[in-house]
Structures are given as structure tokens and as C-alpha cells.
Image (cartoon, rainbow, N blue to C red; front, side, top):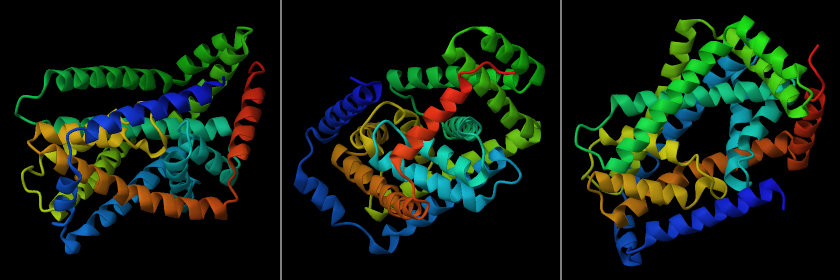
Length: 334
């Protein structure tokens, strides 16, 4: 059985199990009673902040990808990636948006995907900044505290690695050593190191790095405000705004685990649990999770599908392009 198939089956199994635990003990009439309290005037406000978040993220990626990459190009590629993540298994969204950008600009797939990887790195730093700024003063469950320490440790390691790779001499020496080893996957890794380093050279300025981190934090803050308005639209006032960015940050850290397309089940379980820390009953937390999930899932999927049709995107083309790039990268670097 192929690796992608195993991951897909495993992801669906996790989603089903977590969705069961998210719903366990929740009565349908409680969900319906919460939905009936929805304020129509606030119901569509989250869409404005979700739109702002995707625009900020696209702008950030355009800076990372290079001066000749336009906001419109990364915006389209980003939404196609969101659509792919929502409907396709194995998290193909990141590969899809790298593929779309490489096709539009004539980049190698490796170069485009390296820009995606760096973009995701700045997403993580923005989430960490939000976590630290809105860290609740009240004591947290021991498991949550330990998870935060692990996240901080991994992120600090990534920052250290990024700083090392931004030094051209270090990246070239490391790449040459890997390329000299007669193993195809190490040769490909050597090529990827050079591509990552080329991306880092453009954003090596400390001020640019700080700027990108702030853009990322603002994008996540915008998503947090969207979550806050979903909660207020349901007439729930038991949780203060200060807790929302912290919840949103941990939620987005958590959905990195394998799941079904669109994070179904994982999203509900995590949001129900995190909101319960701040006193939100389980039935209200589940209702919030469904509405908030739908508030970005539906527009991302619809608009991303439209752009996918316009760009004539096919899954087999993505896989074929990725395979071709790997074959090219398997030869030693000159």
C-alpha cells in the first residue's frame, strides 16, 4: 500500500475518532437551541476578517517569493491551495500552490515549494507571537502547558536553522557535502537547500524578517477576530476577547496532525476542548466550531474551485510536475 494511501486512511480514522469525542455527551436539541440565538446582523461579519487574513497572507507570500511576484498571483495560488487542502487527501494544498506559482512564473517546482515552506515558517512565528501576547494569566491544564513548551522549543530550533541557512557559505558547504554522497534523496535535499537559501537571501534583512512576522501575526489576529464575531453572533458572552487569539493559535498548531480533508473532526475536537478551558459548555463549543469552520471552509472552497478551473489545474499534473522535479534534482549539483 502506498504511503499517501496509508496517511489518508490514518487521517480519516483520526478525524472520525476525534469527531466522536467532540460530540460525545452533546444533545442535538442543545446545538439547535444555540443556533436559534444567532444574530443575523453579526453572522456575516467574520467573512470580512477572513478575507483580510487571506489578503495579508497572500501579500506576505509575494514578498517571500520575490520582487517580480505579484499579489494577485500569490492570492490565486493561495486560494487554490486552500481548496486542495479542503477537498483532497494527503494535504496536497501546499504542493498545489507551489505548483500554480511555478507555472505562472516559470520557477522550478523546488524553488516555488521552498517559498511555500518559508511562508509556512513565518505563519508559525506569527502564531507563536500571538500565543505569547495573549497568553492567559489563569493557570492552564498541564497538558496544554507542556504542549506550548514543545512548540516553543521546536520553533526556536527552526529559527536557529533558518539563520544558519541564510548564511550562503554555510548553505553551499552543506549542500556540496550532501550532493557528493551517491544517494539520490540526498542529492535532491542538496538542491532544496540551495533553493531555500536563494529565498532567504532576498529576505535576509532583520527588518524584513520582523515585517513578515508582524504581517503573519496580523493575519492570525484577523482570523481570531472572525472567531470572536462567530461567538458573539451566537449570543455567547462567557469568553472574553483576550482568550480568543490564544485559542486560535493553539487550534492552528493542533490541526497540523493528520486528518481528513478540511480538518473535519480534528477542528471540532480541538476548538471544543480549548474553549472549555475558558468555561464554554461543550454544546456551545461544538456549535461555534461548526460555524467558524464553515465560515472559512465554504468561501475558500468555492473561490479556490473557481480559480482551479480557470487555471486548468489537475491533480495528476501536480504529481507529474513534482516527480519530474525530483528526477532532475536526483543528479549531483554542478
